[in-house]
Image (cartoon, rainbow, N blue to C red):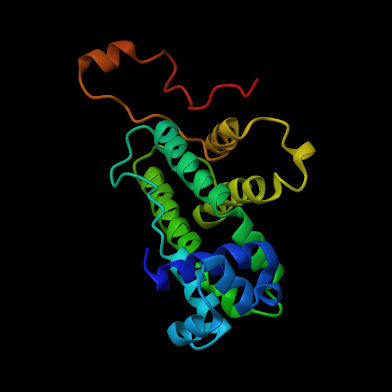
Length: 215
């Protein structure tokens, strides 16, 4: 790994542990295995180094996998939620530290805002497609619905370490719990299968709603 990359990784690790005040150039340089002169030669200042380290983290892609043409809302939102939750858990320390410094360092918070905005946009568009195709009914606001699911996943992923008694179920089960309740809330139904076999297999009285019981 090149010196510049080592410094970026070290800055991120130290920032996660100590925040911007505790992330001294000496500590970052030691973590990276270089001297402070090398750090300043590459980045000029601590603020520039930390800013670039956080910006690099924000550019890491979050591959949600939501399809352009919905087929199975439960399976598709399950995959999306597991991917997003894993991303949040991976970056939980950095997110907590950044939020804690929001008042003093608002630019740092903006550095990590990119992925949530991107994911929210993708989820919002997906929910709108569900409604357009008659795969979710009821009176609900798509933007609020997207915030509801994202907020549930975010709160669990970020707060789980601080208040574990509020999240007694394993991490692996968390996304599924929220998705199933969310599907009920928006009245999501599976896409109708094509062909005569599907008509024969359809239950009497309409299409069954998605989402098994949580018990």
